[in-house]
Length: 99
Image: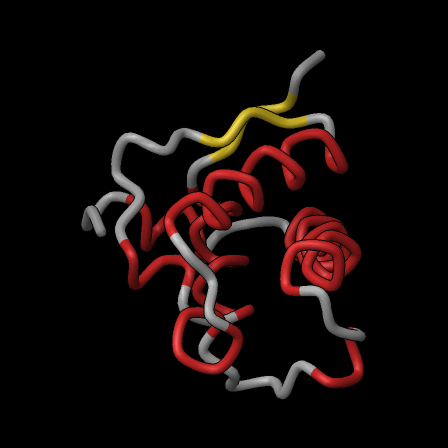
């Protein structure tokens, strides 16, 4: 993860962060094939739900479509998609609106 993504994440508008988090929460059950209530806050998508590299690609595409954004995946590493918090932080710091 790049050091430049941290300040963007920290300074992100709470409304934007909330919108992104809700969008991710809507997509996750389809990708992981479980109910959102069955995904613990600290769950590791890779270890606990078997998310694969192709699943990560599908997840990113679904998030982009759900939120009408583009996510810069050039700096994306496995740790960025391990948990809901890490994924939210990455998307907050690495997205642009599609308008």
